[in-house]
Length: 314
Image (tube, rainbow, N blue to C red; front, side, top):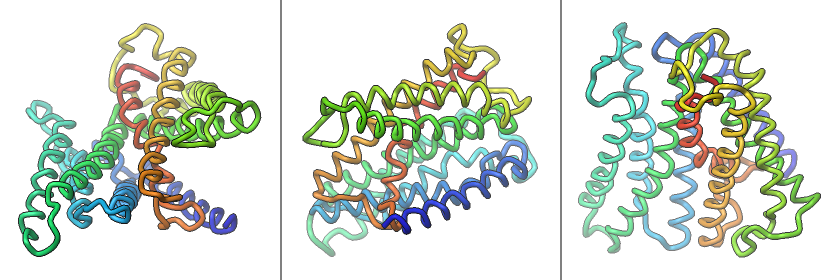
């Protein structure tokens, strides 16, 4: 079990490091993040596969293929503005859709895609078109929207500014898990939500928030400047005075990402417990399912995006 976990982690880290290096050094101007798309699709479709499998195995009907296609459409919708720079032109600055608008359009389109899939198969199998459509919408939106926002987060600012934002978000969010685990083991006495996740404690949650805040400060103080360099962010000045300073930025970013990350972790626990499953899947030997890796990140992407747009590390 431990050997499998180490092997899988080594492969994931190696592939991620290579793609991050290529993205930092070889991405065309205006199409930053293009090298990360294979990784993004793997985690997006892998997570959707896990959740749809949990629903299906627990007797909740879902159109799995249509759900995966809808998830991919939403995820990739944020990449549409990259097409202009790739073909040698600039994305129209006065486009009414903007850049985030494509995500909304794709989310609405995915609903009709799932309905169309049910129309094509209607009468060929068991009833439950409404339930399958609702399940597909839940999975595709729950996974696709945060993954699309991850693309938008990479596109913030110029150069490698967005890459620094992504790495900061991942470091802060994942450090919460480690901080909560060790704090809970050392000081944990009061259960957080025992019926849902018996191992989590209130003391662990507080420890996770503290560690996340410290990691946020380290990232904003040293990691961010090292990666972003002279690149500028999406705003000229923070919307709240002082938010662009490492200390105040960390006091905002750390607790926000820690709390939302824990909510994402508990959301996975809710679905797994309601589906009577230990792991979300088995796509990653030793680690379980892909959702076991992305659970906290999915919930933290939107708050991270808003924090950086508000001027954290501006």
